[in-house]
Amino acid sequence: MTERTARRILSLWLPRLPTDAHSRRHPALCGHPLAAILAERGRLAVAAVNRAAAEAGVRPGMSLADARAIEPALAVFDAEPESDARLLERIAGWCTRYTPWTTPDGPDGVALDITGCAHLFGGEEAMAADLTARLTAAGFESRLAVADTPAAAWALARFGRKAPTLPLRGSLPPPLRRGGIDSSLPCGAGEGRGGGNRADTLLSPLPVAALRLPPATVDGLAAVGLRRIGDLHAVPRATLAARFGPELLRRLDQAYGRLDEPLSPRLPVPPHSVRLALPEPLTTAEAIAEALRRLLATLCAGLEKSGEGARRLRLELHRVDRRLEDAPQTLAIGTGHPVRRPDALMRLFAQKLDRVEPGPGLELMVLSATEAGPLAAAQAALDGGIDGQPELGELMDRLANRLGARAVLRLVPRQSWLPERSVAPASAFADAPGGSLWPADRPRPVRLLAPPEPIEAMALVPDDPPVMFRWRGAQHRIRLADGPERIAAEWWRSDGEPRDYYRVEDEAGRRFWVFRQGLYRPGVAAPWFLHGFFG
Image (cartoon, rainbow, N blue to C red; front, side, top):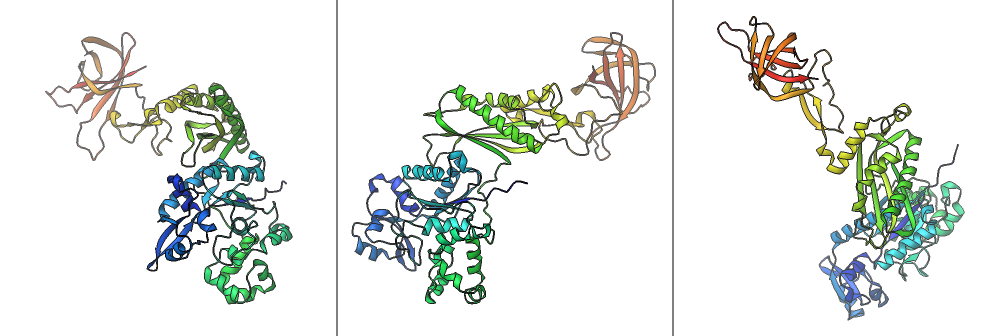
């Protein structure tokens, strides 16, 4: 029995997100003292500052008047929390280049579950270096940390080393280096996994604010001399709970891994996904196609292990010049039935690869099966098709991916006795509607006329099949006939008379489906119609 991979969480902190975003929009302000201000309790207060303002002594929370007294050259702008939240959501989406499991974490952070992903980028240190380097190039100051729990990673990112003196309150420990990478807990260092000494060494010196406690709780702990996380270990848990409430123990247990803390991704994570980090950017169509073949082979191998086939696939292509605001190029394909043959899926992707614009080159490709279904071994082994599909199935898939799934239709049975109402168009890839089956006891023609066309027919007696009929100027003498089969509209409809249908064959061997409309009435000739053809 194999040991389960230890969970690894990367916490990314963007402490100057509002001012960094404003400086990106106004490059002339880069390096100039800058602050975002917000109306608060009848006064203008500083909500965020850039590095130049922080080095001048301006801090979040102080009034604008005090800030200008400290730094007269301070430039200000109105804080826009909603805009910052949208930007953070885009950054969380950009972080999916490292893992599909990302989510915004508060107003200035992103949490990434990198379990099993770091080795694709050369390990956790290499992944962290790449992440911070890209953010720095984009103009964002950042710090990050990795740990077994979201709480420990959050605490280390915001209050870890690099700050010689840590504040007891607030969220901005000075000084902060642009693009800093904090020391992180090694894999398995949580207290619940036997690594308590290592976890305690890094977490104990941090202020209790690193436990994400309310300011009132932080003040209450400081009032009794409990300023660091390590100070809490000397106090009985029952005493802490009685004095400060259960939230303190919950946060403490989350940080040390004694209590699980779920992390929900911003978007549903595909059930099967593979990625290829490219050592050299790909610029040619041949190289991109070869990389895709490798991804398909790996993905299909995983599908085979789970006994599934892909129904929908998405290929994301990340360019080396992609900005945080830009979404990756995406190609999507779908199949009518579960498929896990790389060559068949490659043929579908090949129809769309000419849309790829590699620009200066692709550095990352991510292939995901966003929808999969069970695929039995016997079905996969059938000859003459794709994973049990007939050749028609492959043709349908190719047409749907070129023209769109809505353009490929099929006829499905509908509960109605009248032939022209008993079928309806539906997507070729939708499941057949329940309760509606093709009738097995009543032969139907392969082709129907819409609407039925009138014919001139002659019968020996009124209720007999015709012995001859004329259609479109051609005369047909009947050699064989079978019927009648009486068909009427549903009882709640009043828009049609009963019909007596006959299957007839003329002297040339051609087979027709004809009907007489209406019940026999003496002295009244009932009209005849041709409705379809057999064979």
